[in-house]
Length: 110
Image (tube, rainbow, N blue to C red; front, side):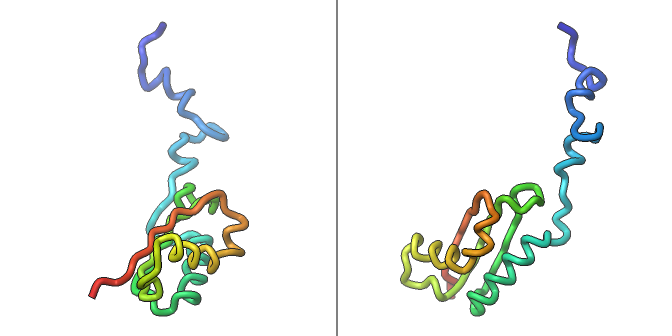
């Protein structure tokens, strides 16, 4: 068996059209994707009093899976499952095209 070297590993680390795999999945986080913007807008409309809404496409930018962090007074005195149901209900149309969703909800601390 040959020793590992960058030259021998290079063909294994190539993706589609010979581009490095990291190039294929690399995404800049300087701006939101179209899907992140859409989900954020829906949540802002449904939870207008939210003090924080953060939506991150954790599928590499293809829109298959999102992580949502939302802080709102509307979650006060509700169990976590009820809070998540509220978010799921708000995103019922968007969820149809998703593979998965991570939801983190909280109530603002005063």
